[in-house]
Image 1 (tube, helix red, strand yellow):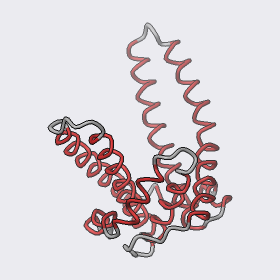
Image 2 (tube, rainbow, N blue to C red):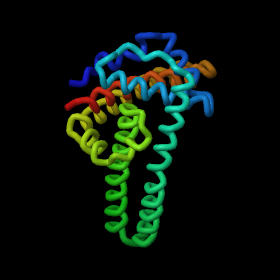
Image 3 (cartoon, one colour):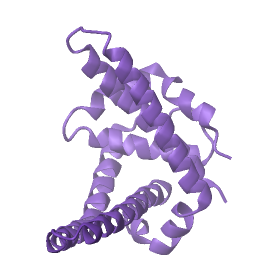
Image 4 (tube, one colour):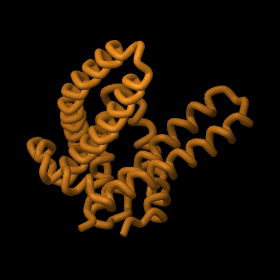
Length: 205
């Protein structure tokens, strides 16, 4: 069972590691270290370990870069699919029903494709093998399960509600740069929360 309580507390279990994550996540190129660290967050969560993993800057950077390449490869076919749907929408320009159906089908495909990419990321986090990120059978079995989908939806809803609450509070703070700083910090903490949840759900039998 996914432990949402520990997942929410996890980003703040080691403030020093969280601060490093916040700093590295906003620096271009260097942010690959944060991406790689998030993979470690997911992998340790798969083993029900809620202590934040140690930073391994070089290793984190390499794994983050590989994860980016994997996502890029997955996005190329999706770009072709997107262009195809744009053409279809143009064809159905004067047909409201056709346009709505086309948009609906695209949203469904985009959603499923997004879950597939998340699954590929989880698979790479688990194995640390580039080729494993394209083992579609294993990925689909793990990430298109009811438990994983439910965990993804719940974590997404919690993240949205937290972000909304923080955004509303920031409206009351008219101090320059504070909203930006808080937003970046919150985004980093929520990423750790999200990948902790997904790591747990991915490891569920």
